[in-house]
Length: 161
Ligand SMILES: NC(=O)c1ccc[n+]([C@@H]2O[C@H](COP(=O)([O-])OP(=O)(O)OC[C@H]3O[C@@H](n4cnc5c(N)ncnc54)[C@H](OP(=O)(O)O)[C@@H]3O)[C@@H](O)[C@H]2O)c1
Image (cartoon, rainbow, N blue to C red; front, side, top):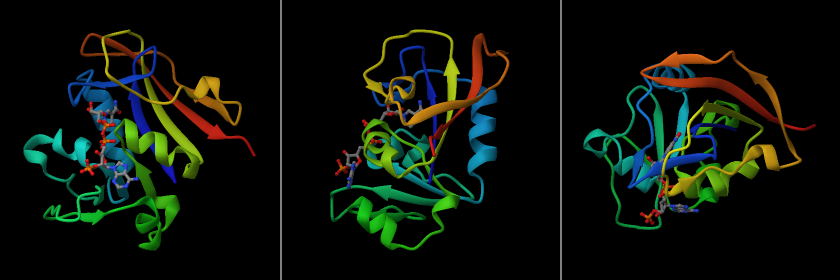
């Protein structure tokens, strides 16, 4: 399983149930990486999307503990075990947040695609800082790139063998 996330300098990922940045290059990267794949997301993340609609051209799995929750065009699961029991090829699955989902599914992931934004801005949701976890190593970092007034680097972390 893989994880994909955009973080600020202190690994902030969101505020007031929204993203911290609007970076078209990163949106494009996210789209290209996840198209045709299975994406796993929390109910709150879904509700931050336009019209609270699942992402097109991807199999969306929404996690919620609310048994009555329904979402047209998505698979709804009540636990991570239920997600795993669906039998999707885990190498084709992307954990796409938010914070609660990243924290609880990181242990199932072998690769994290982290877009690092060279800024610190107020945030109320955070990704686990992979630089502080001995089992993860940074295996790739792009050159800094500019987009929409932001400086970003596309990074890959891999679980150590
Ligand atoms: N920077 C990025 O790349 C990025 C990416 C994605 C999201 N975000 C940001 O992250 C924030 C949202 O994160 P969040 O932590 O508040 O919410 P979240 O992780 O998106 O969703 C949390 C909800 O998921 C459900 N859930 C969580 N764990 C579950 C489990 N084990 N089994 C069943 N259901 C489970 C619960 O839904 P119920 O309450 O319905 O039971 C819970 O309230 C937003 O600000 C968003 O913009 C940032």
